Image (tube, rainbow, N blue to C red):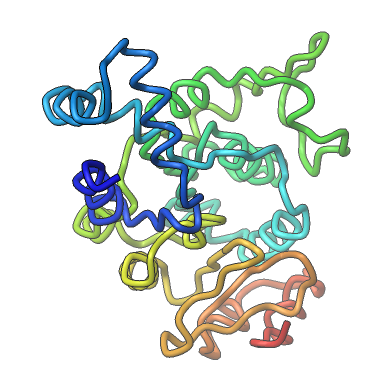
Length: 289
């Protein structure tokens, strides 16, 4: 369908999507669905509609994105986050705020899970900035609402209190809300991320696998520039940063956490006492599996 080439280029160049990974016929299927929904005569008419209607472009983009997530997905990642924070607790109480990026945040379950872990440790709410970003406007609306089907917890015991459960719905604890700011952002917007910068932790799980090679490199370079020297980067189980950026993977099964291979990153700042388990995680960090 050569008439869809303009839309294909838009998805690949603007958002970095690899349509072959998403599904070779995903664009055709979603466009066909939108043609029926708009009662249009065919692809050519749809392309004209798509060009002139920003709302239609947003709807198609949302149809193309993969946004499946749940609370405390891959629990070892959140245990590593907890131990890493515990090893550095004094700085979050009196120093600069703890800054965490969740990209993409989809419908918010991961961002709220991060907030729950931070809150359970007793870090003051005014010392926490969790920036949760996604390009999907409808997913962000659900995230801000903070109301989810109980099945999103996957029948697991939460690693930290999330909120109240009534019937088959979970409502996010109001105490978590001041920590998290949801924002519509394109992961390809390098300048925006560089203007923010200084994140202590970045969760970027299951984004890179849906991107083309050049887009993956661009996003990884951006995240590397935005993360503090001692910071942690969490990726999806099928993802890894470029080998020439100096990352090491922690030897914690199921966490898929990465840090820079520098002495400072591996030992913390040296001021804290105790938390032996957390310190051991970073002494034993390795690029192994």
